[in-house]
Length: 578
Image (cartoon, helix red, strand yellow):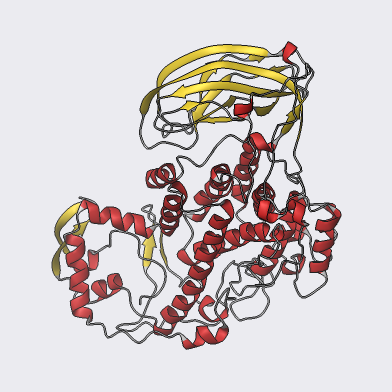
């Protein structure tokens, strides 16, 4: 991830991660065996951009002397002068609590830590990477570990979705009969979803961050497609655990619907982590380790393999899916829908099984959505017999060429290897499955042929680049990265209270990326229909030896060059102009 993306994430997600006390229900605290770490203060500079996410030791490794697997409640108070949040926990089990920026942390609840005969050193690290080194002081007081009996909550307390989350430690008592925590530290959240900040943290750390490094290098259409698919999975998890929300693919109620007692924000959030873990076994596989790592940080148990009941569905075969066999994916037209619904019901609507079922549905849609991302349709429109190329065109597109028609550009990596472009996914404009609009809408929405004055337009292009300021170049860099735009919009809304609940945020994302996806399909239809030359090619081909003052990347400034040597500030995209 580059520095610009880190800046966007850090600015947008400063307050997105909070302690996760409600992930575990602990009772039977044994205060006679509490391990007291004491008080410690440290002042130092944090520079996470240098060498990854920086962790700093506060207390040395903790010898516990108890049986392996013993669970503990971690309690402490902390004061921070840092202008960013710090995650506090143990090096070998980094599930802890978040110390707010420029604030005193007085935990509402303690946090469960899975211990053993010993724990690693108690450390802190920034919740998200910071843009520049910062020196600050953080002081920890009364740090203690108390053995306890802990279990994962069922997130069900008999309330329906209108009182979606109601959970407290009011009845957790210590062995001597006294309340484990003072009354001021109890929490009971009622009337809709809980404070969404912890769930924004799950979304950022467990979904956005693992996928971003894989999405940035993709061409714009693939970015639109994958963000839409991912946000669809996330929303469909919310829909399963709701009384009336609709499936984002079918616009109908999901084929599996959990009982009202399970309609909670934690189930929805944990489900989407399980769905993305399963999705990343086949698509964007490099994200899987990051998703599972985030699940470990937040204490979200996941299944190590496909649930047996899901694997038994007639079309589902994870091994063949990984080999790109279309018939190994969920088929909405066959018995698979009933099979997935039965698997979810048999599990008691366990979020791990529901998440996998939702991922199967979305993957089944993806391999039949007209993009040819398995490459199993050859360029002649017939089945590919081997060595298939993902996203290959099968509609017979040929560049129009000529004086004003698109022709493949020449690219290189600066290593002596040059190659000609192929128009990226020309088939999607007419063949890709739509998400909101109808096929009639797609056909009827046509853009008029632009009456370009090419001589004038190419001079304007050259002039704009020659006179570009650093501010303009920064704008170009930002808006050239489409993912940074949505991250900035979403992060600003989330960071300023624009989303009253986690569910509203998921609804915003699926609405944003689904409509953007359909818009991209119509745009691609028109791009291919008009198939116009790009400015760079026109400048090169018209008066190539003519001299002009223009921006030069080697000197990072303006100088006189021949038009044939013109280059834009950012890469020329491999598709026609409009």
